[in-house]
Image (cartoon, rainbow, N blue to C red; front, side, top):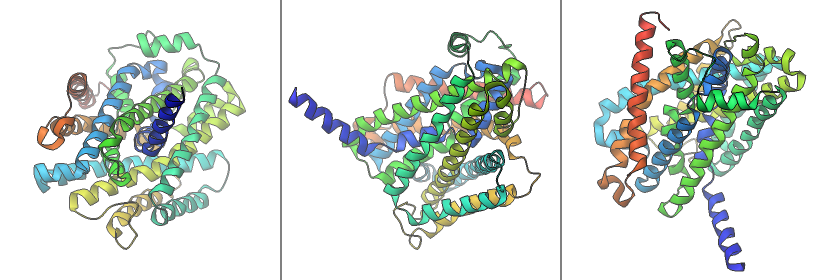
Length: 418
């Protein structure tokens, strides 16, 4: 018994050492843009907006695990590997698409922060500027370990959505049936539904998340001895993030959807929930939006800065000083400032970008999956840690299915069917 407890303690310590990349990356997928997307989709389609959440969770877990494994084995970020194997021109093209998509996500998070301050009834311009300045200073002056503690602490805000869901007094059996078995309350052949479903997928399994988990693991300096613990951490992150998203959908479905109220952003959703679920549910939803915005506004620009550094060969690490990693930090700051300047115009409603930005995120996934497949299955790169079996089937199948869904939805958009 003593030996068992000793081994358990050792394994727990190792798990706590590796804790961070998988959980933070997965939960940060549920940023302000994610909250808005889940909210908009749930107000339109109820719990059907979470249809296929189990395979979605599996795909998130498997792709993040592949990314973590590639990073641990190669000690290189995804941007590094693409540049080395496919050249600068293709890397630059991918980066441009990546930057455009990520800047849209940054705008969503700035808008989410702005909306949360408006909900709390404070001077949103002042607090938005101050918060952005503090976020920039934290990233510049705090090292990797201190920042990771802050990131993990931010996850606490997401538990607000669990309380909001319970306060909505849902029909749990119906919620499970509609999301996990078969949606009976919507037209499954409606292309608009699949457009929103790809958007939900695109904010759950993000292109930036695939890049970020690579870079963040490099910064954490994990090695192959940590691999099985990192795999467990990634799986835990996938489960937690989709539990939060499912609970958001429950809160919105049983307050707004059941009453035929459609919203186009998280701000309106928080206000609309209040008459149906009460003041407390409204406050919890608002706090969740605030925390999601903070985490997303920090993680997403960092993800872009990491990839910029990797593709163009500059030093990019949270343990680097501002002088040594100047371009890394400048690129991080630039994205926040662009978002802030646009958001300071009072009439700007960035949440209207929500479904389109996340649809673009979803559309980029087959490209990212292609690189994950190529790198993870190459023995020259991965040695004995190549992908095999169910992992290969899941990633390839997901890439094909998502590609088909994207094409159908895109055609629907062109011909105004969506």
